[in-house]
Length: 248
Ligand code: PGA
Image (cartoon, rainbow, N blue to C red):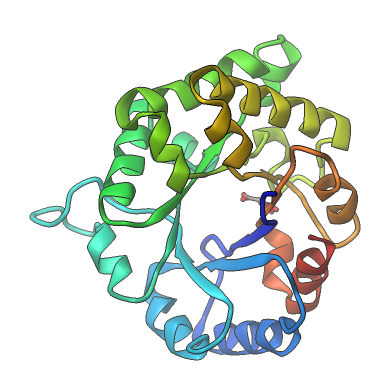
């Protein structure tokens, strides 16, 4: 049985005051929630969140990492650095990084490797553009994104990888995939993993992301191959986020 995972992706939204109230709000309602709950926060707030969540069940995540362990890479942040702040999870290959920062499938695979090498659990984001969906390329795009990772790190590494299926057209748009659309791709991903290892296919958590909110989370998460959510906008309000966590 796969555990439900709810991960908040704050993106580039935070300040010291908002961090304090958002984490405070989440912590006050997290008791009794069975899902594993992660908040992926901007780098400058890792230390603040690390200390606020100390001793709680809330897990800390980051949103990116550099493929190199250290060195002359001005402005970049390594896996070991985020680990230093108690980070366990790191988002890799988010569509915003793929589109705004040119992260190719090869770069994404290298980042997955850097995360795994450091003992972190990467959340590998995959998903198609609207034009891919409209031209029937959804499965081909997602397959290529996942195969690039399997080729570099091997199928067994998926013991420590969480996949997030995030149709790009649904991110931040309010246009959630229907449960049927999402389940179809989740099953496709599970079957794709199953071509290499049925055991890994059954064990790997596959989260849905893209305008998941308090109102639609329960029905999405009740789909057989949807194991939780990666939440953007709705992760910025404690009560909305908690409601999604309770849906898991
Ligand atoms: P959204 O973002 O929930 O605001 O659509 C999800 C994501 O980008 O991970």
